[in-house]
Each structure stands twice: as structure tokens, then as C-alpha cells.
Length: 201
Length: 201
DNA sequence: GCAGAAGCTGACCGATCGGTCAACTACCGT
DNA sequence: ACGGTAGTTGACCGATCGGTCAGCTTCTGC
Image (cartoon, rainbow over all chains, first blue to last red; front, side, top):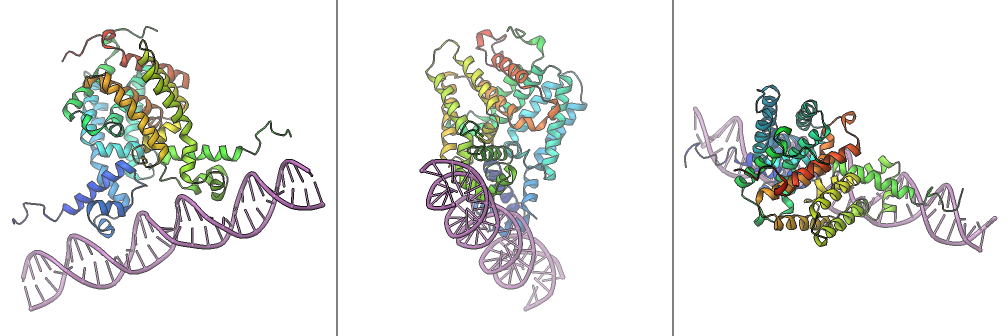
């Protein structure tokens, strides 16, 4: 056994608990998840959970903060970045972010409004709100706003809550899913000049 | 005071409680909503809630069952109906259904997988699964499946969870929202022959 | 006017919640 | 060999949960 190469014990328990908590939060919700459930699911006692994390809220924060920071970075890039392919890059990066942080996004989607009292959730809500405002500003047509909302909301839904409605063996591979999502969203959000018919009826 | 024309008292309390419960379920979730909260919000006591409804679960069922029945009817029409404008009609009716049952849909979206143990939720899950399977069968391309999932999931998200991220005074009127949704979804789901480029890569 | 049903409520129950605390074990450097 | 620290746990706490029950008021049919 090496001295510190393998994280055999040190950070393992904390990570296992964090992962178990994230899964529970994403599937049954924050309020409905008890520390006992998390402990059981990870193979520890409830006391151990509270040893590694000061509170249930701290556990939630540890579980989803990285994804929120990443989203904020993507959003800042969009708000400040160059003007050529801004939207396209934003959507691409958000799709990737959704794919890599499915559970964290799921937690946020199903708990965002109700847990806005928690600082970490409030931070995420503020970021999403910033994005919504930016979109509503530069897309004055309601239809264009709806287009954007359907695109991002649909992608988020498809990768999180929507997964529960398809049998596991029917789920496409992640890379195929990512490719399709990029294509569909790029098509949906293409500026009007690239579209075929400008709404016949 | 007439004898039975005005439902002055009879059904009023039950309806008020049902409405209060639906709002709480949709915003903070079923598990996180206590009977006490519902009672306080409606101006009754917790005991009154349990007088009008046998249990918390019965209250949930009373609140969302109509929307589920309506959805099942729309779905049956789609699965059995004529072949000319099936998809278009399905999407149109689902959009209208979403608009008229926002809170019930919200409850289902954020609680569907986690509350599948409840019969009423299991029924709704089965219906959505039927829809997903039908779509996956007649649209063999993953991209087309993603297109459909983004469209319906995006519409559902936009009308429920997504609303929390826009200021109330920036929200478009319902009829305008409905018109835009119909247009965007019809465009997104148009059969490939009406689309501009049939997926170049 | 009066019996009885309907509506409504506070008191109460067992269970479970998040969180605290003291004690035990295992491993560390010296 | 030993003191100290990190990790883990069961016992326990007050609060709140969903749900029961007996009793109170109000309205209704006769």
C-alpha cells in the first residue's frame, strides 16, 4: 500500500457521501431526502454525514456548487464575449454543461424556486435570471424568446427529468445524444435568415 | 339566500383547500409541503384539511387527477386517430393542456419519478411513457426523437419551472405565449420535407 | 324547538426529522 | 510505548411530520 497515491480513506468517505446525496437530491428532492437515507445509501451512519458536512445544506452546496460556478463562467463569457457566434457557442457550452452535470442540474430544476432561501440556490437562480434577461433584451419578439426558452428548457428537461420516462435500454449513448442536441438546438436557434419559411400562418 | 344555487359553503372549503394544496405542491413539492402549510395558506386548520380529504395523498390526487385524465384523452386520440395531421394536433392540444393545467403539470414534472409509488402519479408516468414509446417507434432517428423531446419538454418547462426565472411584469400574456408556442413547436416538429436542410452532417 | 348531520377545531399520538454530544477505534509522529 | 488527531458511531434532543379522535359550533329538516 502506497502512502498517499490512492485516496483510499482520506477523501473517499466525503466523496461517497456527496455522490450519494446528489443522487438522492436529484431523484426525490432536497426536502424529501433525509440524512439517514443518504447515510444508508452510502454505507455510513447519519452521524458520519454530519461529521463530514456541517449540515444538510452544506452537503447540498458541496454537491452542486461546481456546476453552478461552471454555468456562471459560461454565462459571463456569453455576456462579455465576442459577437460573431455568441449564441451558438453559448448553446453548445450549455449542452455540454448539462451533459456533464446532469444530477446537479436536475436538483436545481426541480428545487430552484422552492429553495431560493438557500444561498447556493439563490446564486444559481440569479445566474439563470441573468441569462433570461439577456435573452429577453436582445430578442424582442416573444416568439424568439419562446424559441430560446424551449431550446434551453427542452435540453435541460430531456437530460434530467425526461430521462425517467424512457427505458434504460432505449436510451441513446451520450455522444449520440450530445450530437443530436447540438444539431436540434442549432437549428431551432438559427437566426431567422437561415430559416426556411418565416411562419406561413 | 337561495337553497343550492350558490355553492356558498358546501364545496367552497374543499375547493379552496385543493387549490392551496396544488399551489404548494407545485412550488415547494409534495414531500416538502405539510398539511399545516396548506391549512394556513387556505385559512383553515390542519384538521379541516383531513376532514375534507382522507389523506395528503388523496389531496394530491384530487388536485391533479383531472389534468391527467385530460392528457390521457389527448394521448388516446393521438394513438388511435387519423394520420393526416396527427402530430400537429397532438402538439397543439398538449400546448393548450399545459397552459390550462400549469400547476398540475408542474407538480408532475418535479415529482413524477420520485412519487411513482403513488397510484395517481404512476398513472401519469405510464401515460407519458406511452407517449415517449410511440414517438421513439415512429421516429427512428435519434435526432428526431431529441427534436420531439426538446419540443414537448421545452414547452412544459417554459410554462412551469421556467416561469420562476422571469419577472412577472415581463411575462407575456397567455394568448401571445400560446400563439408563439404553437408556432415554434410546429416549426420545430415539421416533417423533414418541410424543413430547409435535411441534417447536413 | 329540536334531533342530527355537517363543518371545523385543538389536543394528542407515534414516527421521523436535522442536529448535538460523548465515547470508542484506528492510526499517526515521536 | 504513548499522546493526539481523524473517523465513526449510538444515544439522545426538540421540532415537526401525517393522522386520529372527541368535542364544539352551525346549519337543516321536520
